Length: 150
Image 1 (tube, helix red, strand yellow):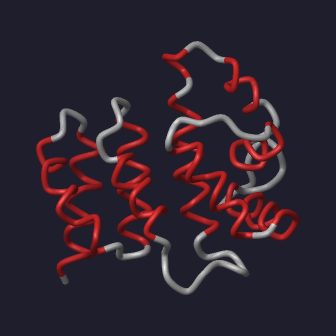
Image 2 (image 1 turned 180 degrees about the vertical axis):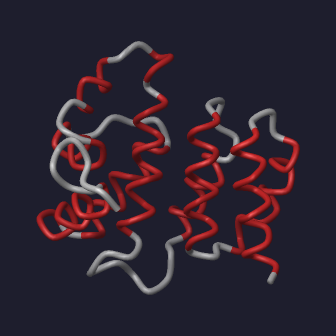
């Protein structure tokens, strides 16, 4: 993966954040962001780049990016050193909540995390997304179901 504009990939940045703050703390912050809460601007910067903290004060129609970045943080933090062997129920619950988010990018990213970690408990919430209005969400839902049912 190529470096981002801020000189590191999201994965590298999130892994570094986990090393600094502890993976359990990063997981909690990602769950909070995915649920719509605010967090420390330094965490948002690590998840999405140095310009990202401005979204903490963004108009509501742009704040969905914080939820996307929370889900993306889970994508990498769940595999970082210090991550629990089992994905915690509150993480699965947050991801399932992301599947009904009003913005398609949040739904798509939640599906990517669910598929990567094979979170079977989320399966019942995925099927309705096979008919989502957004093509990328429908594709991610089909992939997640293939992964979970193989």
